[in-house]
Image 1 (cartoon, one colour):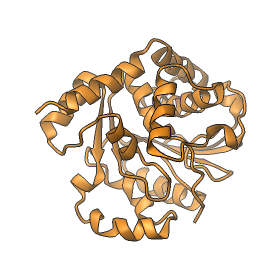
Image 2 (cartoon, rainbow, N blue to C red):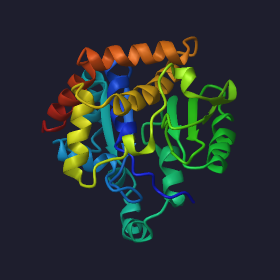
Image 3 (cartoon, helix red, strand yellow):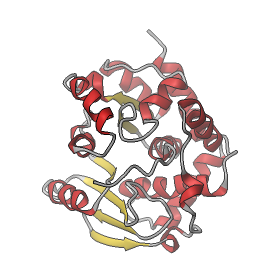
Image 4 (cartoon, helix red, strand yellow):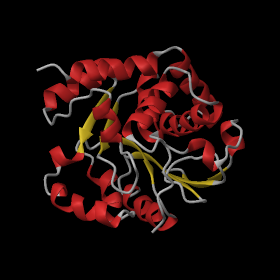
Length: 254
């Protein structure tokens, strides 16, 4: 099992950039267990109200391009193992299980995994469904996302690839440039900085790189550099931030 790299909330930020680019994102997440601050921690802090009401989630998808499915509301049994997971503080079977039990049953999915064994297992399972579009990502230096700190192994229905920063047309970053906040408040501040275009180039670029992979799942004919450009437009135009504000607003409606 790999140790947590404690990056900021890259995948959740990427979800909003994808949504801002015009695609629908049903994010399945939880409170932090093997990291200091999970996607649910940040979303809750930013004012998002969790629900398992299908009509409300569909409205958020339609109007904001995003909805958040807080795992404990959909998988009640997970509550019972949460204290044990926190006590262990390392990646466990449940980290592997999350992407496989997304309640929305997406036909397009990007998954980041923490080692190559898990990547190969997911690839084996996913490719059994010929109508399923996916990308499985693992950075070879241990990240369960595109970190831009080194080579990245990618699996998709088209096969496996070894990617470098050149494939995205983005500069390499140092590990310390993409670490997350130590508290939920710090993580949320960084989260908003990215969406408001006030983050560092390294923070922004790593979000763009992950967003590009997700967009490519929808757009097989586009290369990663083109998908980065689509992601940049979503971020710079403010549409990614607008997706967040709209999702939070809709989540509070009774």
